[in-house]
Figure 1 (tube, helix red, strand yellow):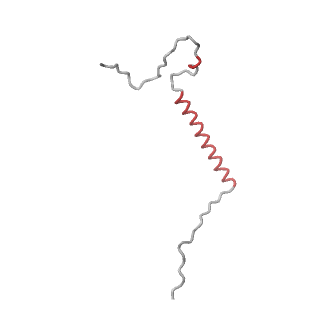
Figure 2 (tube, rainbow, N blue to C red):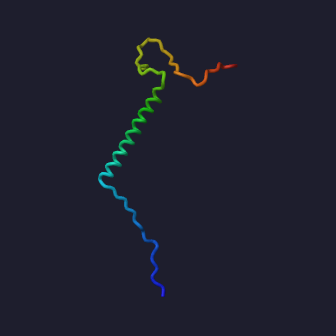
Figure 3 (cartoon, rainbow, N blue to C red):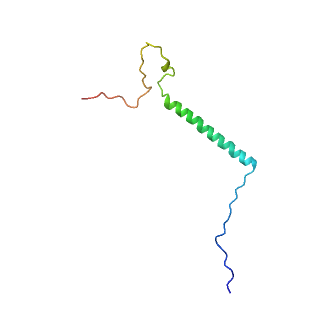
Length: 84
């Protein structure tokens, strides 16, 4: 005679345990990663908004002073004259 069939739908639980020191360590690592990303974003934003060759005080020019044109520090290719 056949015995009882075992149910294959039994759920196996997965348990992940960390000590207080482990949680604190993960918190410190996440804080350092977020701080690094924040500082990298600040640096990239400043680099994009203030490209090389511009003056920080360009907006504070005196009234009536001649306007200076800013030239990039280096060009990848020389500018070709337009041929008509």
